[in-house]
Length: 195
Image 1 (cartoon, helix red, strand yellow):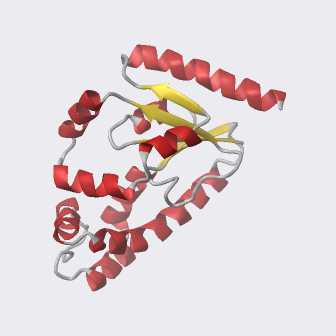
Image 2: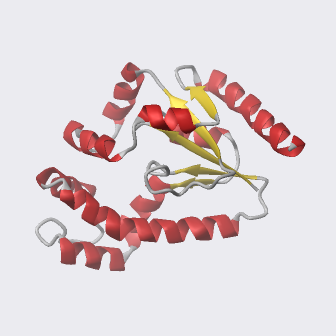
């Protein structure tokens, strides 16, 4: 199985690019949303650690935003509770898709949490700042302060770009991007088959 990991900054289009590979995608952001909606143990643990902010189930994103805005350390507390659950779900995803030729890992903190392996193909998704800002403003709960906190938590983009096996410039139309990913996917498979 080839593991392709999309890396890049917030709003660069990692999830969009991940889907274009047309193979199973582990989307950590969606997994986290699902945890907040359905995992009562996670809720109990967050409520115990952050009772001032977390009071009702399902967990509201707005409550998490208030907690992070109030104190930077709250992001670490939330991560310490949520990340182990995400890792468990990732292991299950990999086991469930072990017969797939390719799986795509769309995990914003992949590098920071050392979730990549030596043989993973790292694809850095790059986009113009103006495109990123435009994408971020379309998101529900857009909050510049929180985005800056989350960015602060991510490794430098330069470091990620240097680590990447491939760099994708995500500043083009969806059709052009489909063709770029189709070519990249073929190149990755060909290179893996020849080694």
